[in-house]
Length: 168
Image (cartoon, rainbow, N blue to C red; front, side, top):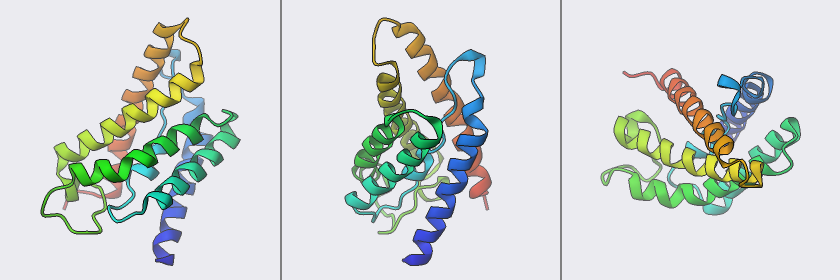
């Protein structure tokens, strides 16, 4: 239990460092930055309690907010997907899966896991960019930023997942 938590904490700190030091400076085509911190919440195992998922989402979001200066936007978006992740994982997990399923390409299958990541990432980005824009006067810019950030985030998450869990 403690080793799992320490591994998850180290993984969270690594992703936060990458997000804060590198990805927050990258804006493809001048729009939105890739957001990979959501991967910490996305990869929580099937047996994770809702309160634990919410604490991980809020804690990681709070640290991201402190370093990015986004005033609670990351906290709100990550807490929201932490609320949605456990029931969505139960719904999308293979029927014959183990009780402590760790979401990955190998555990869920490529297509199911890709759908799972994309759905949670879209929900995360909807909340994040709706709160960041806080106005619908520039809806086109918000939509473009969200789309570019979603595409870049999805590609980076797939890359990270393929490096983290290479196909055997």
